[in-house]
Image (cartoon, rainbow, N blue to C red):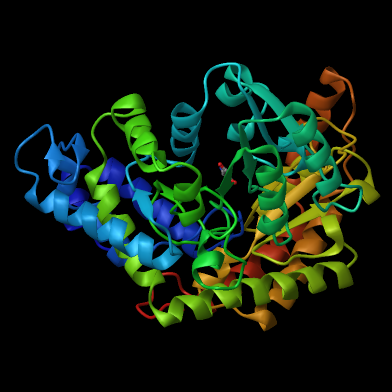
Length: 448
Ligand code: DSN
């Protein structure tokens, strides 16, 4: 357990909650594919005195005094990101992924301009033009989908791009289990003269580790969060590529001005320092091994789930993420699946699947991934075990029916929660999960 002696005596309530969360993470399998376990070094930088500083502006161009060390931190972070991803310009100030993407819109588009992105229900992200998000409300959003086999429908992407002539096209997803073909997106964007932005938040660590194709040669802009496969603290970056500079020499200053003063105030310097530490870790050769192991684990987990009777969107995985399609058991079973897995100590999230017969509130899929388990040192052998446990838990979950009407649904969910909470098979799986967690403790010093 990570000791925080001062906090323990000055605020025992928060101390207790941090200890409880540490224990929850240690004794359970974190399988939400956008989550990971950052290093103690990252968290020490995050908890540093840089949280106390204001530094509106950019290195050596600040509105406040006392920024000599902040300047060094931010410059170092930028240099590390440039080296890791091979890009020309980096802004490390966005508070998180959605603000980073918002800054790209603010830099390039006027309200009402056309933008294209992957539909949320087909695995895209809210900020890529979803109807209730600012991106779908402020701009004329056109959404592309996947084919019945779950792969991106490039014929549709091209047709929609030619028809709507978007100023900006997004590629990148939050629930897509296959490698993204950035080259294909690049050709379409060039054909219609659009800016192409790759949001690699989910796969940044895989790109950095060389196990997923890099978007850099094909796109103008890359955005990413820093806390998913990249394994840093929560934050984001916007990068401009050589291709981006060739299209628009002003791109770096447009992006910088959009972040500050356009949308944000003072950067979170403690967050920047922690991102620098994570980027330093990602530049080491061990990180590439880690990234490759994430994918090996994902493939092993896909095989185990399939062998144990589960159906996967696209039939497998090329990256860190898998999407289980539960429709063979009926529609809208995702919530029951998530509840059963939670009871067993396996944290995942319910998710829509392409062409989901149910609603986004009661979807028919489970989204899960291997970044956090790989950080704990688990390999293919453990994935075979985990796949079996997940399949067992989902079979328990899927005996419950999700009615279409609101009243029936509420009663069914309450009944299912009670039954799932006391199910003996799930209790057995919980014990197996605990035994596995004990073999791979979270806070050991050596990490893959
Ligand atoms: N919340 C992130 C995810 O889980 O994929 C996306 O913003």
